[in-house]
Length: 344
Ligand code: KG4
Ligand code: ZN
Image (cartoon, rainbow, N blue to C red; front, side):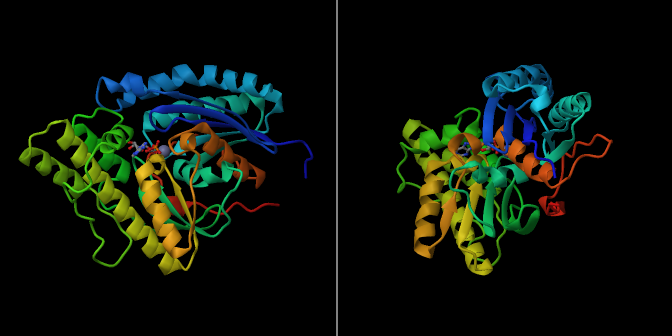
């Protein structure tokens, strides 16, 4: 066993945020982020080629900023962690290439991290982290999943979306209401002015057993409602509110079902949509009723960030895992294929 303190550089480039952070034996030492939102906004969504190029431009300056913030140098590092999937393949490759090259030059190990493992471990960065086992609700732009988490790497998929992810449904509904990109926060802001009693949207797949989701119908419901009514500002807000209520209720119903089914009393909610205030209120009410303790990441760590990748990479490197010589980016990667790291 080495007594030298461990410190891991984490790099996240799976989509439209470049995240870099340092996590080690003394916790989170630095965390920087560059969001590409302004660059993609004029196209109404993420343009993959622009995303890749921007990651390449921003990574080294962000790494330098992290080193300066934490007052460390490359030889203080014991490893480099990066997101190796799932995500946009060009964006992933930008992170993989920089991370692997730096690790090679610095003669330290590197480790590819599963992006969704990063999200689900993000609450571990808080001062009151959850204990295993727990149920995790992962709600991001690409995934909506309920997972039984017994330990790091021990993931049992309980249910998932059969079509659009929750974040994707937020983004598409925001687009059809002309609320712009990124859709989730824009729709949430618009919904605050909405009347919850004007429209009622369905709670898809809640009146049959099982833990899978389907959100694409809600977007269609929003479209037909917007076509049947004059789309003034109030109507837009009322539709946004009805949509948000339906997503929040549906997620809460399925979370409750999964907690009862597994007999667990701890719920972790992570991924971009976990930043949604209304969802948190709805889930907290469900948690109170059931006696469930609910853990969320801090607001900035709900969406993509380097800290969650540094944390997950630190845990896996600590257990002696590291990359083989080949370089791999995995645009598709089931979370259930991961293993639990074995500490020596
Ligand atoms: O986790 P994330 O940053 O990236 C992925 O891994 O996909 O999640 C991004 C998603 C987007 O769909 C975005 O619209 C949604 O999270 N999102 C929100 C909110 N903030 C981000 N959805 C609803 N309410 C929010 N406040
Ligand atoms: Zn994400």
